[in-house]
Image (cartoon, rainbow, N blue to C red):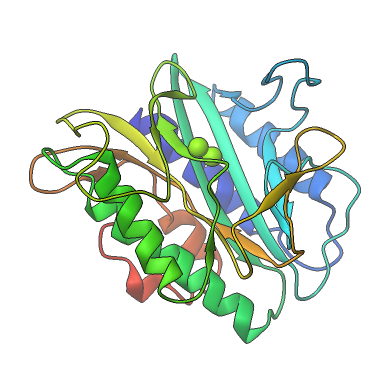
Length: 260
Ligand code: MG
Ligand code: MG
């Protein structure tokens, strides 16, 4: 699982090298797919099925501005000031990896920079709660209160999850909830913590393609995701943003407390 998570981090760094105005999201997706396959893994999202929907067609979810998550790669050309969330999953030797990062395309507004910073910090605050003896609700509450105190909307319709031999396993890891509630966290549990945070309200809608999730009020949204093993005393973060942040000038790096 560590190898899978590491490959996701390296794939996102390959994407990071290309994020600039004029590039299509399909280009990012092709580069990611080639990179994943050339390292002996399979894209985890490509062909993923939910109910009667057509299978997800991309290696990446590319979610621009008011798209929260699950944006389909295509002909959209990135432009200066866009906020681009990229989510990547792989399967390597039978185990899944899953992590996400929100990129600035060129210069973004101060408001969007702040959104990214708060989401990033909320992720790290949530990760710090992933220790043996806590409960899922301790993570949920920490993420929710951190973001809501700063005036942001916390998406409720989508949640983090367990991960392992399947991409999505129990337990669900909501980004909202009450302290001391929910499943007890135990040494060795591996979960994905992934706050999806809006500059407006928490409400979201699903687009006509059945996949694309947008904010209901059109406000921009950010998304960061880490894959974490619950340990005694301190969590073990399997995914890493270090490769990405070697590529971009990350303004939030100082805030990283627990990133492995
Ligand atoms: Mg993900
Ligand atoms: Mg996930």
